[in-house]
View 1 (cartoon, one colour):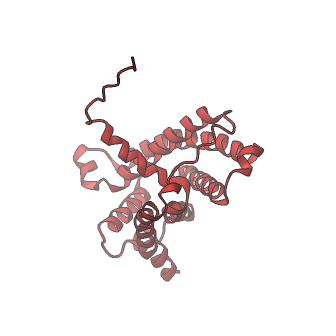
View 2 (view 1 turned 90 degrees about the vertical axis):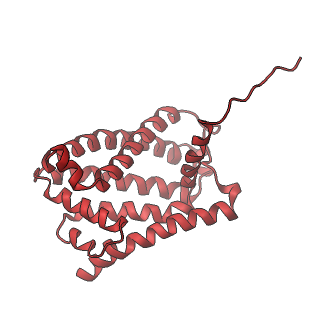
View 3 (view 1 turned 90 degrees about the horizontal axis):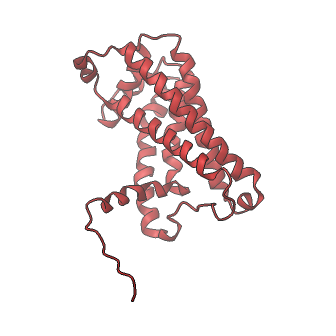
Length: 228
């Protein structure tokens, strides 16, 4: 079991991140015409706007909550005088709210994808896989809230933070911090890491284009005149 734990939480994260970055770069270089979100709005518009808003707002809040919550050094929270228990309760509350929002939106989008024949027939197996994968990952994440309610001292949350920080700083013994955590946390982390593994091979690559849109902010205005 120690060997499996070392592989999945000490080695596997680097495999996923390598495929995530290199795979995205190769996809952009070799298959630029496939670099799109393949919107289904023209096929059927019902539930799309509300589902999209709920899902994207919820999942972005959850993602950045994980990013800053896990990677912010413990010394920073201690400097602010925020206890581990208080941080855990805040994380559980915000994660529950935005995770549920993302789940409701995702269910609406899945209903369109699987139940509307015009969309279903124009969807690839990868389109459906990524929706199901996110659904399972969100469901596992929401279920960990009930596990966390059993110990509000923040002890297990600290283990997750130390694991994530050891991974991104390439320090050894990262997997040891997850040795004794709940299996639900391990399953949630595994599903989350594997999502980065499959990311370059799905329509999710369009997320990278969002960063390109930031270049429009400092760009000079374009003057458009009507034709006389």
